Length: 298
Ligand code: 13P
Ligand code: SF4
Image 1 (tube, rainbow, N blue to C red):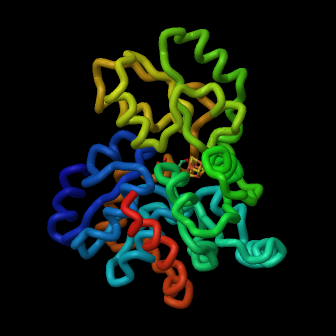
Image 2 (image 1 turned 180 degrees about the horizontal axis):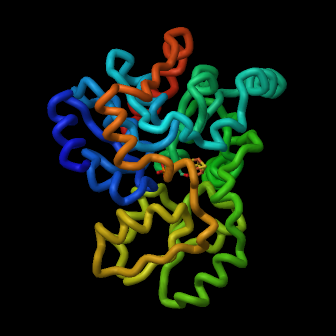
Image 3 (image 1 turned 135 degrees about the vertical axis):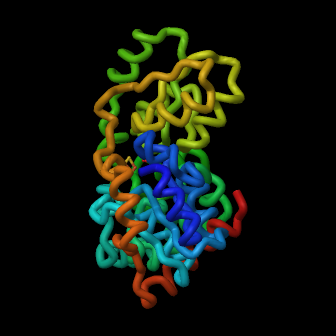
């Protein structure tokens, strides 16, 4: 299957982009694995005709927003992100108006329709710099309350917080971290900013998924407890085979990120099924905040 997939990629002038949480066999056949920021940048720059996105719906939608002329395929169509569905355009408009129309900073983990109502996007890798890049002193951040609180702690601006969250990161507790530290007393604890503030307080470093991989390479430490989805254990262990990596808790398992298998990628390339196309009336507004973030070159 792997060979046939790579043959089709060549024949069709396709590219396979995979998020760091994807199953190992998917990461192994991808042209690029990365965090949301790296994958969006690559989706905006590739000259491939077809982008196969191994991730979840908001990632494929972002590729379609940036490259409307390309065919974007999400091999399993119901791979979504529960956090992205925690903000709905009507409610966002109402909240923005009630606050006196501050700029809206929207995490890329959001629907295209919500992006279309936003002023700028951010990812876990650039959130603080994105917020600080704005002229206004007040912002509304959607949909992740934990990412917003993390940004609020690192800016002088007033941050209004939407009440969304990642069900897996938000579930991590101080007790989970204490237990993991007791199991691995020498290890540093590196957390994703989608974790709650009381967990982030315990972290030696706070990073995006690819930021964690870079941190492990730069650090003198030999072992790390990862405060993020368990899928990151694969690429980080592959990058640094001489170092040790541990999950904080096995409950950090995103079922949507594990839906795509090799047979789905093969079928999608073979039949061009799983097309994701953001309608033009949404895309024309949704591209502004995404491109504005990319143009900051953070
Ligand atoms: P990253 O952009 O850090 O890879 O995070 C994406 C994500 O979905 C985290 O839950
Ligand atoms: Fe969404 Fe959380 Fe899964 Fe990331 S880990 S895709 S934020 S549900």
